[in-house]
Image (cartoon, rainbow, N blue to C red; front, side):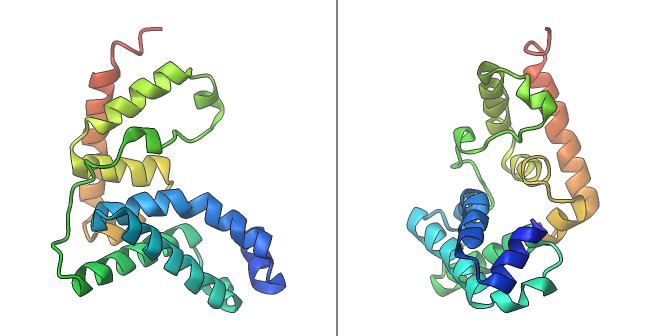
Length: 180
């Protein structure tokens, strides 16, 4: 990731920027949508965040965690959008669909069949909205408990308890699946 950011900053590498964009766009779009409930506005907000990064690419070395920076930027842009449009801030991510979220590829998940991945995604969709959001940010997007707590304005203890609850519910929902 650091090589990608260095290429963008020091070489004005548009291909590296496009790669960064493609790597994060859909996750950030889904995150923005959980606030705005508008496909067009969410897409525009995420594009604005990336445009801002490109315009200020000479300062990229000051960003210690690009993942967290992008999420916080999209959250702030979404909240500003809601303030400008006087819309209430929604807290549910129930409108997000499990098929938009992929389980991260690691050696274990490479062994899991598509059918099992579909069952896991369906189980994730059955989680309460807060558990679902925290689960996705920690387990799928790789944010730390502290980063999620800061992003959502909650304590790390709340993140921990919500994640424990999510994992217990998933284990219960997937118990018949795990009998291989």
